[in-house]
Length: 315
Image (cartoon, rainbow, N blue to C red; front, top):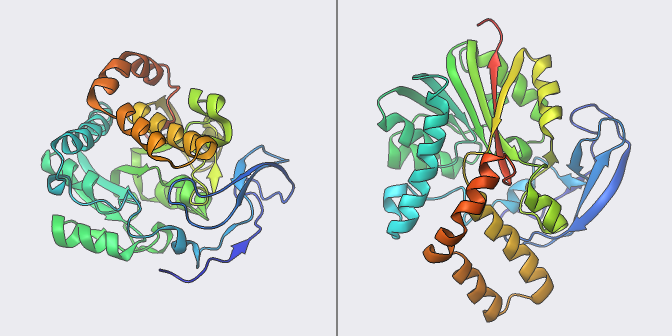
């Protein structure tokens, strides 16, 4: 495993203020890695962030190979249900994009092993390319899926300006030490009228209100900041990107199961009974039973993950 992490206290990444109010502390509930981490609210602009946070040089400690986004190709999944579930999510993303842009050149930032890019390329509508800082994940996408993936941070990769019709960041922004610089880079790479499409934890979700510090959207210590929809709109306007729409696309029930797991394990422990309850909750019959309620939450934009659609000026 990577060497032990080092922590730093940093000013607000949106406004630069160093003043903040502590909200709560919590452990790594997802991977059970050591440490206790704190969420604070910026006293100037209200942005929620982790402080102190792991440094850019040592945060890899919290991204071991078993981290779920570094997953194998969909066709290599042994479970038929899991293959269907993953591909269904990709199709929802594809349809949301193609309602706004039917095809063209697409860059996925933080593409992990490249499954989204591969599914988009299969449609025949897209020339795809990815950026992924994890070298092993990027190599997997290149070697197993035949994709063009740059193994680095977006701000370090030399790409042509105003060249992309769509740039996506799926659950990436909250992981970045330098979110503003990455947004500026994305704005520079978009064609006039191009689309910047990104998903972030939804601070307005019902799960956050219901489960508080057990909400999956915190995902300490890998999530470094938690912008609201309004804060994102403000930042993007500075870069010539105009927010057009917000939409919950995928993951309402799986995200709830994750939040439920965090709450159960923290209050009742990791026992065989809690594990059995979680397995039952994730079974197909229970998922079907709960589908109408979670479909409504998704439609009302109250699921735990929300996607923003912003357009570059110059339409």
